[in-house]
Length: 438
Image (cartoon, rainbow, N blue to C red; front, side, top):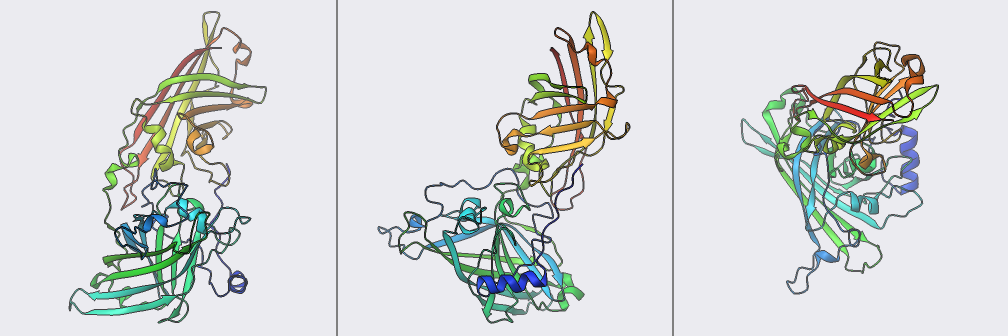
């Protein structure tokens, strides 16, 4: 099986080239570990937005109420110090803004997926204040008070789905203010909420030596302008956010809706109700059987964004399958044995979106067990459960003729990862049974 491509990180040479090309914007050194990489993104749908106005900010202005400053407030769902080194403290906040979403729709305006498209939303600069709270003495100390230059889009070849800027005052030029759109950056599923990153280049050594003694308050803001069609000179946005009490020991704090509202965190299992089944490929090289359907709650369809993702919050740990054919009143096996499969893996968006797939583990690794989510793979509809037999793993192919009855049986075992500890919960099984006539 193909593996997901690794994240691209900026080399020193790339940093120099990027700074030269973008007039001083530094590389953010790639996504590395983020809240999303830790499996804590709220998957399965982002904010709703209108494509008609997502790239301009006229909705932030109301002449009748006298609101003319373009204020937009970022609501944080969760926040954490995701990386702490001697030369880096990386704080990340997941959420979205109101009244104007800065979700993935706006991300496509600021960091277009095609380098042939010029950004129509530009972030012109911002500020960040990081205040340390000593939990023993209650002393508050400002550890960063920085002003940032433009948050620029590095381009898809360098780093997709982000805008990033460095400090121009109050720091050493190596502090970072950044927005990451995980669905565009390849670190989350389409529709994932954006991540705002504040990165310090010189964190106090005490944070590493006695991490449980300190928490941090963060205030940040940034400004954006729009050149989208229909925008006017007043179309500017002042975006601001604040989070209090972020532990420096790496613990995530949750401020948004409880995670239990996600379909990824209520795994049930069950028997699939079949809407369509068939032998979709019959050749000397392979036999491909597919069943379309879902459990009555339609949970499997909802789980696509949780399982066909990197990182995944639902893991299909394995399964088994067997195929028989009844012809002339005699039932014969089509697979040479009951096929057993290991973990169904996500190949990655760049390789094959919307699927998880495994090879059999007891017959040479030639046959395949797979789930396809058409909603994520470029189509629409209920999940497809595929069993594909390699030529060395099937028999009685000559019995697969018109009028023969095929019996398809497969089990797909899944576990849900705890959103904080990432430990797997109880295993649940989705059973797929289908009888169909060729």
